[in-house]
Image (cartoon, rainbow, N blue to C red; front, side, top):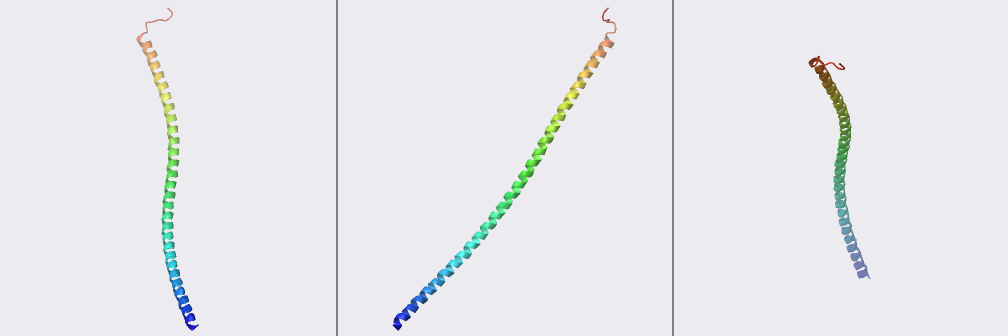
Length: 113
């Protein structure tokens, strides 16, 4: 009976040792996995930060583009108004020169005579 108890104790001791080794291996694997997870999480955070910065830059560029577009539209309208004013001035000047030229060049012509 003592022999059986001794074998049982040896078997239990071996199983205990095996369980301790497995536990140690599992703990090592867990630590490695946690390290990998932390590293990947840090990389994802950096990527997210870079994407967020790119998004902010894009939003600023879009806003600046919108302001530029509005300014261009206003300047285009102002240019068209100025062209119209200039065309009117040129036309008026041409008429004045034509009338004045006819008046000075043809004083002998009498209308209605």
